Image 1 (tube, one colour):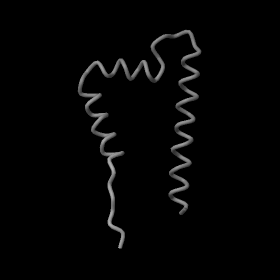
Image 2 (cartoon, one colour):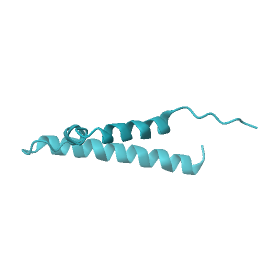
Image 3 (cartoon, rainbow, N blue to C red):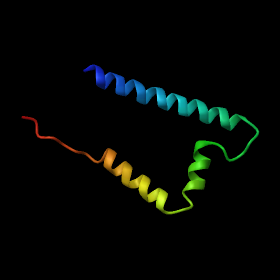
Length: 69
C-alpha cells in the first residue's frame, strides 16, 4: 500500500471519529435538535438535498472498474 492511500484512509478514519465524538457530545447536552441525524432530517425537508446526496453517493460508490494493462 502506498503512502497516499495510507494517508487518505487515516484522514477518513480520523474524520469519522471526530464526527462520532461530536455527535455524542451534542447528544449529551441539554439542547435538542443539534445531533447530526436531527440536522440531516431537518435539511431533508426540502427534496433537493436528499436527491443531491443520493447523486453524490451514487457517484462515489457505483463500481467503476478500470481495465488493467
